[in-house]
Image (cartoon, rainbow, N blue to C red; front, side):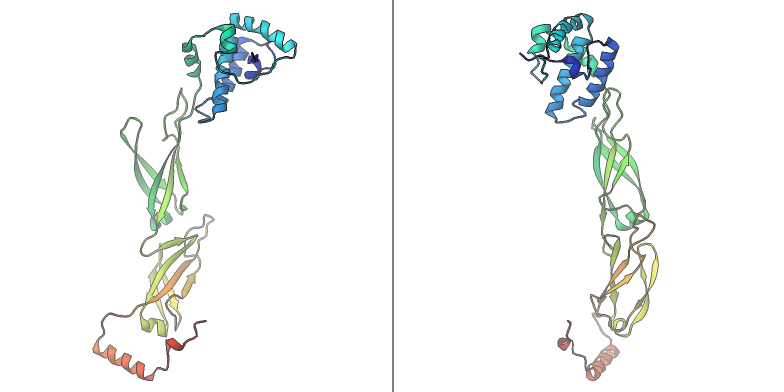
Length: 293
């Protein structure tokens, strides 16, 4: 049979301690190894059982006195070797069964914070850029719905989390409630898409705007922007406008990336057809003979 050093289990170096000192030591060890704080850790579960076992014996003057005789004999002879053993071995042989009600009463004194709850919030890119006020509904432990208002800060990043204190699962034994963690998902739309701190937008041009060059006004993420289109621009070419993209979290912004797309009209007037026919006759341009490299 292996002797259990209950004083060592409670992190006490000697048996010359008061009942109050034993209680303080118990509370410190119980908080550290409580199963609710160390979910899924089998070693902590076994350690917590030994901590409760030690407290049951050492907190009662009669059982402490009886244990101390054995402790003095083992510790004095340097023969003690503490390790986890199943409940009902050393403890039961020497001290019998102790009422489980006392264990429950002791455990009830250990305050445990409630678990955090995680959920997701979908935002449009413009909402994420400007900031927004949103509401989400969560199902509580009793099955009812709870509505929570969320202030989304400007320039929040994809997958960034918003923490709302105290809106998670209830704490135990007087412990604080857990927190609500909201992971933000940002959706691109038909007009804008987010690429790092840059915002990409398709820039649609007429053939004559692309051929002659022009100055046009476009919608940015939060403002109208004047853009100079160089003559001869082709579909797929990029125009980059600095400091007109997404917020970078440091007071600046990324770039607005404009990708040119040249569109042809579906229908032509007779005059337009004449002009295109005239252009066909006088132009020597052949795109099939252009070296794109």
